Image 1 (cartoon, rainbow, N blue to C red):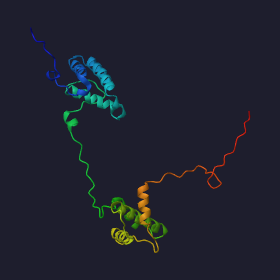
Image 2: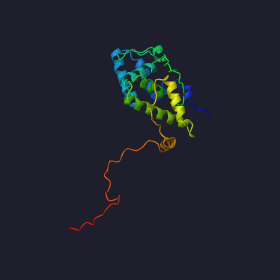
Image 3: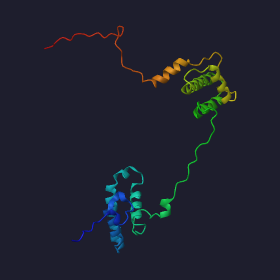
Image 4: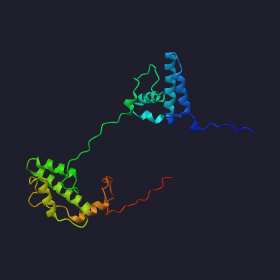
Length: 220
């Protein structure tokens, strides 16, 4: 009794793009065997419609059609010669890696304050002296105190915040005389509660907050 031979995927030709399946790969191989260029181009466009249905998520991309044609050329091992709407890419072009994006290496004086605080201080130092600059410097100081409490939740003296503010601004940003920072307890309470909800603009009932219900007469 002869043993039947089984057809395993491991014995079949390698699929270049497995997501499209073996039938699509056979379509591409059939297209390569067509001698007439016009007929070969017509068949290639039909294959594009098939793989577009198999890969619908690409429709959200900007280069949807260009990507499908690139996949078709890749499955043909760049041997397909048709009149497509896009030029045939080269293997080196598709395998090339993008240039490395440089990571910002700007040093931060105090990590717990962050880079944003330093930018705010630099912007405040360039402002003209006056009430606007005094208000902005107080906002920055309170922000520094809140950032400090995010790392040290016990307490932070206002003198440390004032000293760090002067150091980061090189003595250019100072609080107005008599300005007071927010209390530590208030800042910690705000951090625990998270961002405040929007103000409820609905009218509240009068009369000490109690609603007065009136009985409606039955009209019928």
